[in-house]
Image 1 (cartoon, rainbow, N blue to C red):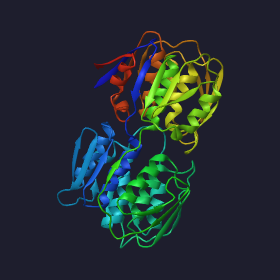
Image 2: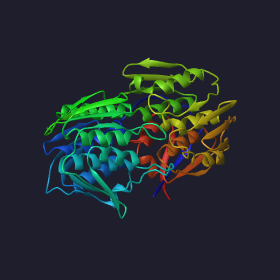
Image 3: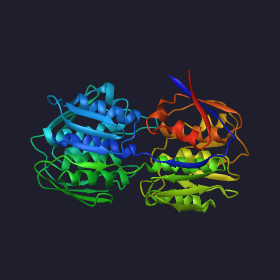
Image 4: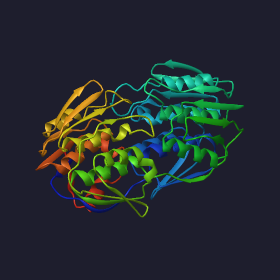
Length: 420
């Protein structure tokens, strides 16, 4: 196992290209289970999570080839309808194979999912949607066992305690494309990644309207064809590099990113006095003086993304004044707080709130990554801190950031790996 060592205090500048979206490519890979025809997916980041999803597809009987950002999925050996615990338990997004397996083969057995430890993340909305489509769902020995004589279109309300669910929307949408009749999903997730999945399914021959809005309409079809698709860019990676520029008082141009997917982040940065300028196929963010503290509340898209909460907390930890960060998606997603405090931050948690009192500087320390975005927040803090920071358990980072060391090095950071 490796650790990441960061020598902080350097101003980052230059250009960086954002990779394809992790949260988009995973359900799109799962959607290839809906056909035996070849599917070619481009712009795929080489991440621990994408590799895991490809392993799951192979275990389910697909032939999968991955080369230089392009994945080709074809029919392989005999289909297997069991998604094993050893693979699904490592990554929550792998649970979205349930919808396409049940929709196409009328039965599936999928392990309950794992992933980052960021609080309770039940699969009740997934089960609700599948049952309303006509699937019988039982939980047996840690597995979801689903069967159906044939899914039927219906009207489904998918709102949950903390709002809409991206993966539940993905799962139900993929199950519904081969169901008989019309399905309407209300309170659907509106994230760009859901819209990207919808576009992929339409290219396969699905009849979908409203993807990317709270109401999705799906007219079931008998079969789907293969297609070719390019993944949208990763808005969370783009946001992380934007914060990196501000944390280091730098000047970074971020290429291959969509401004319209980052509206809530740009709104908060504007409130903080930061100017984000448009650049060719991206944005340029440079430090122009004092940053003001802001209050942030995470909400479903188009609200402030929960996946940017930890990174924003790192920025506020070195911003003079007091800011309040409220987590309304995963109220327990604060495991980075004690690690930031080890570096000299002054953050106090009160339930779903974190009160952040900005400090003048952070100090390098040994810290432990607890999940993907917490890892990113610690890297950002380390880039700003005086001295060296050692970040342990960086396998979390590998789940969502492609070649982050080389990208940071290209911007002038001193960062490298060492064996534990």
